[in-house]
Length: 58
Image (tube, helix red, strand yellow):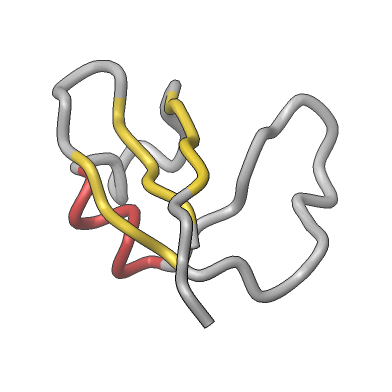
């Protein structure tokens, strides 16, 4: 689980990482349409974000 924050507007969302992507060079993380929408960049497609590891008890 990571917290992804859109640096342009400060919106954040917590997401589960479920694969090893991204597969496009220069990208930090690929997000679902739902996560991109919540972060406010679905219509743009790309955004500058920060990614923070969330500790999760098992």
